[in-house]
Image 1 (cartoon, one colour):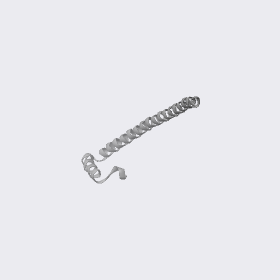
Image 2 (cartoon, one colour):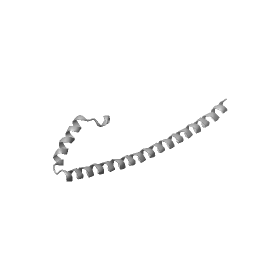
Image 3 (spheres, helix red, strand yellow):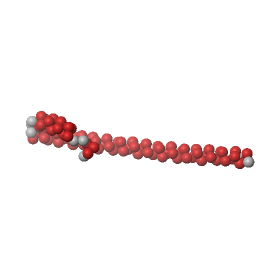
Length: 86
């Protein structure tokens, strides 16, 4: 009986080690996916920032007093809107 116990223990340790390796691989894959997603989100955010700056420049050309109007409108929107509801 002792012989069987000593044989089972190394087998369980091997199985646990294998499961641990698989979990580590899965975690590494998830971390890589997270990094890739973060890069994509940053790229999209940078693109949106450039578009907003382009729109501001365009509106300022069309209306020289746009800056003053924009500040007021922006303050109002910040008070009245929650980005999580949009």
